[in-house]
Image: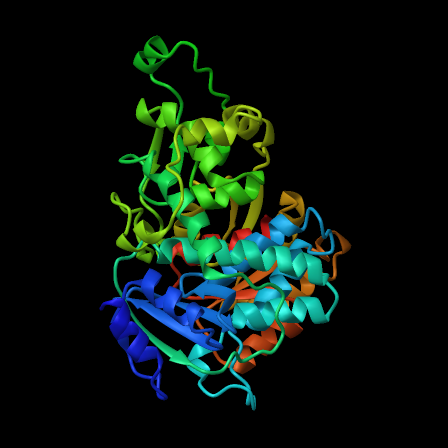
Length: 437
């Protein structure tokens, strides 16, 4: 769709239907015509973006792939400036808003445009967990992260509603400066191809072979790498290490090229996001920015070696997780799911012996099945909570029940959260590290 056709489309009174165009051209036109409302852009059937506009300025961007994981990651980064953003508060925010049922709202004309992550951000400010300045910085970072992969696409379908929903605004920016930022980042990502094609690829380090040691005698990788380079994506490593993922990837590239570090594909659902394009998308050619040369060297020239930074910051802790379930199959499966994620799983098959074994293990987190013989999970949870040593230990109820009554029972028994059976490895890892990291 050309620019004139897009312009004609956005001048119509009814913008609820789907149209088609380049994400760059669509956003540039909506911002140039100073629209206020929410714009949704769809990449086939895989994922979609919701963009909040006020008088042609972008005030929030999110996408449908794990928006609360993104929010928690940015809360964790901001916690260095706002220590009140504890892991308990991050977990509480997810519980309150991630699966929140939309309430009647006179400002909401179409619930499909609702962004629970933005509503959660507003709540953090209202509850004074974040200052306006902190919320502004966090919103800017979240906008840039979510917008970046959208502009890698050549074509999207889109629709628009002239309503912003929640009235609070923390940050606003013209489209062009954000597009220039994304263009610069894309050129840096492309320098890392073909080995790197997604920020969500997962680097693994299993130790060097004798051949690699002979080829690269100067590369003395710490064994600590085997702890952190074992399942975390580049983007999640950036959060854990408080560094830009491009710096991390750039520093690891010599090891990736020599296959000392092995890259695995993004874990679902991150595989739904666009891949880094090999060519600059057509929309970026409209930007008047100078060609960036020697980019990776420029990024790191004033900072310490990224490899040293990773080694210095690598956490050495292995988390202990007590898992209580009368099913040997479930225990084996959980152990397999968490094996690559710096976790030691203590499997407990007899619920009657669980209190003593849990206390002996001193776990960082407890996974507790609900339906067990002799003593059910609710009773066992109440019993464990009576011990002062386990008062603040996260307890996750694992249940096949999804009703409101069952959730209420779990909460009343002292459970921190619940995980519904059957669960995927992604769901289990996400739940566990929500309360551990």
